[in-house]
Image (cartoon, rainbow, N blue to C red; front, side):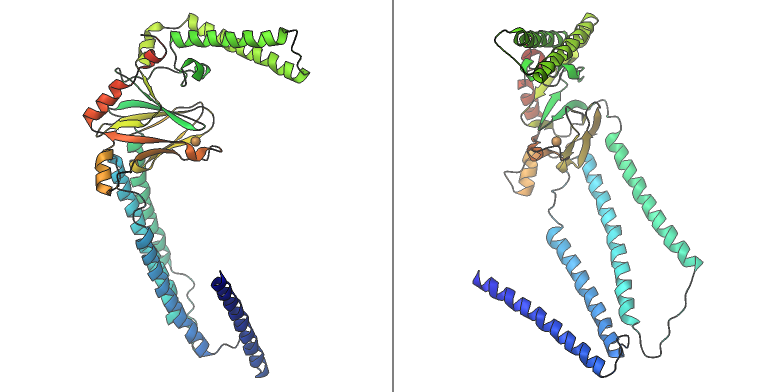
Length: 390
Ligand SMILES: [Cu+2]
């Protein structure tokens, strides 16, 4: 503490001393009748040398920091397209670094070599068509190559999956992820936001005759509850509160009417697609070398599904389905061995600041070999089992 204070005082005194010296120098120059714009050749030479020195220190520090902190940001890509994406990132960095070193070298080297000497005259160089052409065409070609390669990668990730792809839904809300595996038929059952209700075991609003009936029963009980309160002789509400309660009854009754209409025309043969789905709230399990198509939904606000180790990210948007696919290529066990880190885990983060607990919105991912995965999946209950329908 004390030594820090002394260092601070030394620094402050140093700054004061330097500014005083500069002032003395200025006054001395004035006394000698020297104007401010008269700069001696030795001053210019000193500045030229400092320019060169700055360039050397600048380049050395860039190389040092890239070496020190540039590596180990992310382990190797653990998905098929991720390897190519890393290559593309490397290509971009290579181009950026080449341009960076060339332009900065020219800037500082020229400033240092061609400093103002007595009698030297600037060369008047107003325009050159050839130069203009070169520095327009070359960057255009380089940028076109980068954009074409980037678009190609993007199309690879977002294009329709192959027939082998397993479909998994990821449902996002403040502040958690819920996964839904598509079951034996590899088809995700239909959903309806009016059915989203944890209290009747339907957190994702999956549509079946049973879940619709459950929701109608649940909502009717709510309505009856609210009406009982409104008609009670022993309870008195403020006007504002009573108005809100009436509104709530109206709203819930409207939803019940809609659901009853939908129930009347409901096609029961579609239920099987939903009943064999499996909802998973713990870790997300994936099978190595299996292609997955992820479909995303959001309940409340925009979230973003970010799989850093697989180099994948997609926004999840309320009222809209988004999707992408990838194929994990390295199991969790293999990755732990390669990194020499027994605690390593793949993870799915939310990558949109979506509210107070945004930083807790993540789901651990386990990439398993085929046998482990199949065993795990077969142990998960189907949606039909959780809502009591066979
Ligand atoms: Cu979020």
